[in-house]
Length: 160
Image (tube, rainbow, N blue to C red; front, side):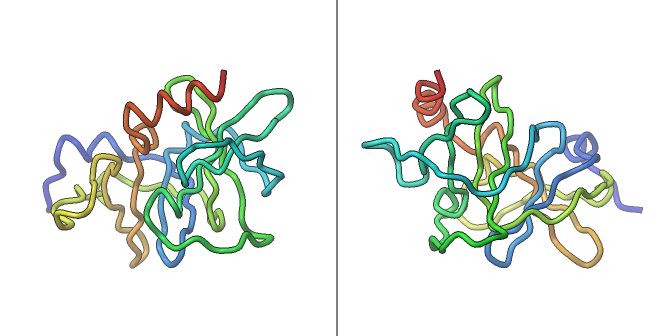
């Protein structure tokens, strides 16, 4: 029987899985507020490429990030499957544009491994671990660390 590290043993639970390109990612379901179809996004001048802009969601201003761009993936046209996942990060609602949402998975801690060494060019700070489920790898995201402190403060200013 394989020993589960302390870090990964606390990670078991429900994850919303999403797709970017050919990869499957997971976000802790408790961080997800809602999922909406793609809507008109108002651009914010002089902002980072990955910050697509803001949306008005029932009277609340929500900054919207494109995860493809944030993860240095090629930008693609939005389709009818493209959606925005609204998550809560440090008491701020944030929209994440993804190619599609897949399903909610229950991933056991025994199915999660640490991200390990993925090469020097890969920033692993925002990875919780790698879920091995049904012969697939699900890259588990620490949504609170998708943005560094400087990036988060800029987004926080926009949402106020």
